Image (cartoon, rainbow, N blue to C red; front, side):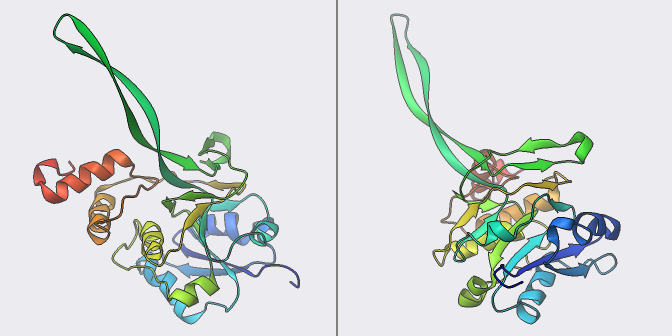
Length: 256
């Protein structure tokens, strides 16, 4: 592989057939090293598996792709990764807040009208991916021509260089066993001044995922862990951040 970036794909697998179809037999991943942690019986938390790789199998100089078993590359990552900054965390789709001006009309009594100009804060998804099975897929996120700064990237695929892991001794927090471990990783790295970016990749994520009760329990833990950080995730935007943050202080606002 002289002249090419060394790439490792690490996945925790519960559906062997799906993994074989989308990753093991994916022609775009030829030349990449595939690491499979079978989790069909033990149901070990995903961060535990990822940390095992980082501590026992991680190469000295390689790109690490930590992805779901239902994530599919539709192009070779070799040329793309060769252009990326090794001091940044990446993902094919991420989210960041932005603002826009808003106007509202207020009635004061019966005789006058005054306008009020303000700003709304809302999340934008950067990096466009296909989501769903091919016959029912839809496009999610804004297509970008260069990496775009985001708060967090979706856990379907996270990309980080081994040299960055080694330099800061970065690890996944096992407290986020099956939800928000990727988002926590970016927020923990932010404490060292490490940024997270979305990068455009032609790819598909089969499952849209869902925010169940366990997700919201872990989300509350994430808010407690980073009380001074404002952030959004692909499953929880500004509204959810505000609601859950208030719930930590006043239980009246707790998530139902």
